[in-house]
Image (tube, rainbow, N blue to C red; front, side, top):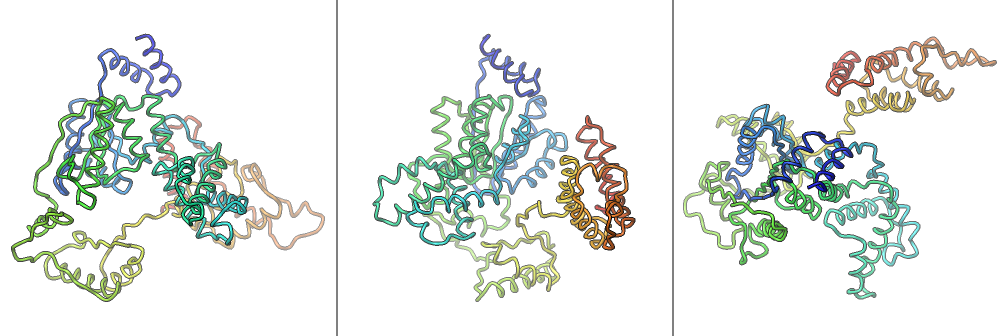
Length: 530
């Protein structure tokens, strides 16, 4: 018991994780013979698995409000899941449940540990490293060394290395596989080159953090430090898991009070299931998790099987299609089909044009609302331009569900630059990044004039922050007619005064809530949100 208490106190002191509550919770669990468990919530598509999760979270929190709860979902469902949880459990439930993807969970743990200043390898940095590695090892490459490799090859190589890491493929494993290949064959040459480049990349990033390794780091941290021992966890909406996600799940199963996993299948195990069958991948996933749980002697609770008819389908044709599509023993629908139509068109343009016409008819003649209609595409990138053009022509309001890089948003660039101004002590580059977002009232001609002056005289740091006039031209022996320093100082003061006052008004001990309130006020006053 003394040994257990020492471990608990060391963890709490080292990481400052709610010290007293954490230690008390762990000590109580050690005394009571702490046990963990897991269970499956399964059913066919539309049977109510997510709704069951939200209801369980709400009821569990009502019965035990001091316990911690977590919902892990794919990245693309995070916002919708938070909204659904809010609808079921209200504000208190939604505000006290950690809703995140595996990637965000890793980020959340790093923030908890205070790991915020890591030197991370970004995409551009990774590509530069790989370009350098290819050049340095050109003579040792059997297949890729003889031809010039451009940006497209480096991008593909970068993506392939990310894929290797996600699926637990190491350069050591690849090296071992070479012995089974014919040394004169193209496969051997390709694997040899990829092994060499992958190994060199791993050595190059020593001391840096690769985001592709974040989930393995998370699994290792959960294992070593016993995280989430006072959590009940739900894992929902996944079709399957990568090896690194499996690692995280397995460590959560060994530590959390209970892990609930949803599975879109009508059975959890089936020895007769064969590849190509509808639920075969999901059954394999469930069997793999059960094998681990049983091997670790983790208690498997009775699964919850949901047998309700799919609520998302209101017609019998769609219910029948859901039950029989990709089913090796599919049944034929005997009744007349009125609610499924198959149309064939010559090209994508005609396809979207006909869809736009059908949408217009449904809204105009049958009382549908635009928000009740979805257009599902197999390849959104190829259809996007047609949708934008044709739907605009038909005056159909639309939202294209595609990821956009938030770092390219002018508001995000503005806020990042604003914070970097203070962090980097008024570095000129940060100030001009902020000004060139187009969100300020300063005309671009004045920004260019100010930037040329700053570059000419090497102005940096405290020279921006001091309340003094710039008189570098007047101090020169030869007159300079390119700049009017009265104009320069007027532009400089207009640009910097509000920024300077904003940071002066924020004490070092400001709470995050107060900081963001002041930031919002500043953005309004500066005209950014106007």
